Each structure stands twice: as structure tokens, then as C-alpha cells.
Amino acid sequence: MNDKVQVEVLGLSQSPTSNGSYALILKEVDGDRRLPIVIGAPEAGAIAYEIEGVHTSRPMTHDLIKSIIETFDSKVTEIFIHEMKDSTFYASLHFYGSESIVDARPSDAIAIALRFDAPIYIASSLLDLAGFSLDELETSDDDEEIEEEEGDEQEDDVDFFLKDGSQKKSPSTMTELEQLESELEQAIKDEDYEKAAQLRDRIEGMK
Image (cartoon, rainbow, N blue to C red):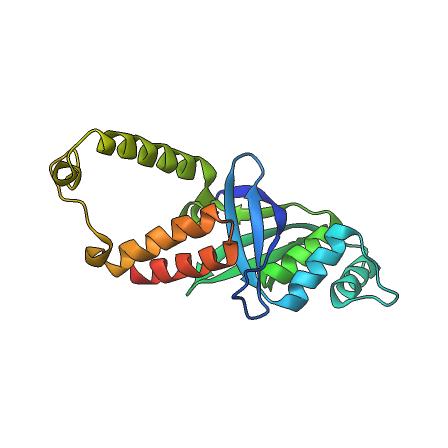
């Protein structure tokens, strides 16, 4: 069984270039790693309504599902995002008093979990693979500042080489993978999590 890490919904993000899609941002409960999952507008609305406490005059789909589950004297005890294939995440719903497990899209599973106030878990290996650590970004920023300060004290031709003697790569000589990784880091800094998720998926497909 995969090790589980509990996460919570941090929010929803939409980039100016999105085609009606949103990035659902999950945050590690006992850490600072974040995981964006691209979802559609209807699912984003269902999640946002529950977070903001908005109730419609007639039940929405996820409210109806909750009522059906409760009619059978059960409830959702947790959801588990357990797998990622071809940049697509897979989740499952777990129920009280039953060993039954129902497969679901993470967006639907989370919308239902929020209505039951049920915990959200993700496989530790998935968070390691697809999550972003803010600490790593801050460390990277500090390293860049140190390199810039050192570069100011050196000749331009000397600054073109790294400490280990290897040559710095100019943008024109960067590989496509390195360019994507650079764009990914910038997207995270800009909190454009939808773009970050798309870049992450492209990077994983190239490795």
C-alpha cells in the first residue's frame, strides 16, 4: 500500500491564457509542497461553491451524490489520489462501513470530500514526483543572488564559467528540457499553477 500524505485545498487558479480550465491547488498539511491539478470549469465551480458556502435552490450533482450516499446510511471517510498516468491523476472514494472503493476523477472526488468534510490524501510518491516545494524555490533564489554578487566582482569572461570550471549555457544553447524547467520555475514564482502543471506534464513526458 502506498504511503499517504494528507493535503488540503489551497485554492483555485486561472491563468489569462486558459481555455476555461482551472488549476486546483492542493497543499501538504504537514509541509509546504503544493500540487496543481488542471480541472474543468464545472468541477471548479462545484468546489468553489462548497468552499465559499454557496447553496443553490436545487441540489447540484455533487450535492445529489452526497444525499444518495447518506440515504444508504454511509458517508465518505476519505479520498485517495493514488496514481498518475499520461499526466492524468486517478483518485478513489472510500466509504464508512464498507470495503468498497469507487474510482473517480480527483476533481469530483474532492468536491464530494469537501461536502463530507472528509480528509484528502495523495500517494507520497506522487507528491514527490509532481509537487512543488516553496523551500526549494527560496533556496534557488538565494543561490542566484549569491552568484550575481560574485559575478559583479569578476571579469565578464570569467563570469561565463561556473566554479567547477564548466561553461555557463546561454539561452541559445539551452536544451528544450532546460528551457521548460526554467519556465516551470518562473510559473511557480508567479503562482501561475495552471501553466506550471502543464509544463510539469511536458517535462515528465520528456524524461
